[in-house]
Length: 125
Length: 508
Image 1 (cartoon, helix red, strand yellow):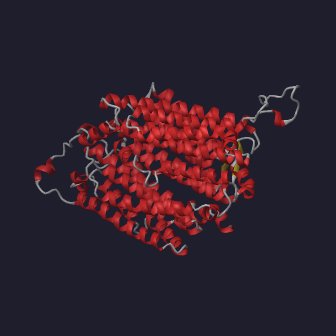
Image 2 (cartoon, chains in turn cyan, orange):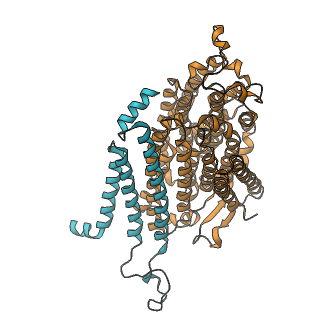
Image 3 (cartoon, one colour):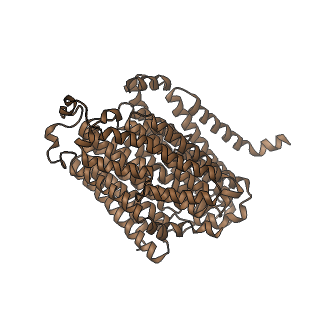
């Protein structure tokens, strides 16, 4: 029974593991760059969730073709893919801003360690 | 007038992009474009507000001509009109205020500040107006990205504080998106009205419950609800005054509004109170947040940090309104969105004015400001009275609604929390009032008008009554008038806008 449980759901389990790894990186790591890496893993897991949810075995792209006819079950659902595309654009923008903030932080504090930066921030304040 | 809902975000986004292009060549023209676009969006929101209240019907707009639920839909109903008017109004005032303050606090950043402000307001107005769950996520992130840019231009620690905010914001946005995924795969739609129509058959579904919890959790993270508020004090303390004055009043409130929107219009009535105890959880967390924010604020020496902790407490009032989940309590919470936006905007702009004139940010240093900047300090007193909740200022009435709501819900602990926190905010604000109106003890301090870190005497020419220039004083004056007027006429807002908005709760 357990094997069947995992066999039917392994993509979702993988996604859950990726989400957990991403969150772990963002919350437990002290290095800011590692936090940003955690963030991208977290975001990627969400993209995978949408793609996996929309996946259909044996279906084709959502453009009408003579071969497949008018049966909607033979076509992929385009909406989740469009959502992921938009989400990827948003994610890239967030990562870009995060990296530029990281760069500024490093130039001003000479460190990427969160604790070191907080310490020097409290001292100067 | 069916184009109206689309025109509001469009004029803001256009203004933002144009302002960026023009601003690189001419700062003044760039500012003017951003200001014009935001003011136009404000006027359109007011027109929409009048239209919606007089007809009683929401204005719907199908983006790109795709008929909903296939396409994205903008819906300007009572609540959306209420929020867009607030967001664009605060945006317009801050854009009037910004140039002098930005030039003083973060020189060289003006060209990018105005477009970011217009885009921030565009994102927030879009969040208020959209009728589509995924579109809300996109606008949420547009607003968030613009906010990161605005906040990071401040003091030395600005980028680091903003990076921590960004990480929390990314988790919040991620959870929300994940929740939308769960809803989409179980319901088959992301259009709010369509989801609402299909949900009643699926209320028992575990994936719908997971989706609802994830969406609310994500928005609560974005809202800075206690104990997930820890980024807020550092961010507001290190941000430029005008950016903090724009973001603190409206940004977290729109996320709170999105939770209210989910509760009222997407999920069936009483879903958040009976099927899953989301409302009660938010309520208790908020009650703790109110006390925590108010108590920590008492010990703060930095004006901006005090306001930030006060914000942690004040946003939780809105959360308390959600937690009460009865019409009166929710009206109180929604009314507090506008009240607190006006008061906190006013307080941050006053902080910017003090910093522009004298360079001071620490409260103990502000002794004698009442003589140096009397008019600004009168506005400060109005804001303080409203924060404490003294009638007839705006802050009083939202607390009264919340208290009636708490009585109706038999939530006596929350009732006590509201009263206690009013007393606590009286402590930290009256302490500062005492400082600014205390006379300077020795003459040598009083003669020190050359203002350490403030503006030079030449820049002071043309300032209102020797205090701050008109472009900074007028927004302060308008906001302090608004704090009193919204208080006096709150029953009009409640009757015309908020009662129709919370009607779904009455039906359920």
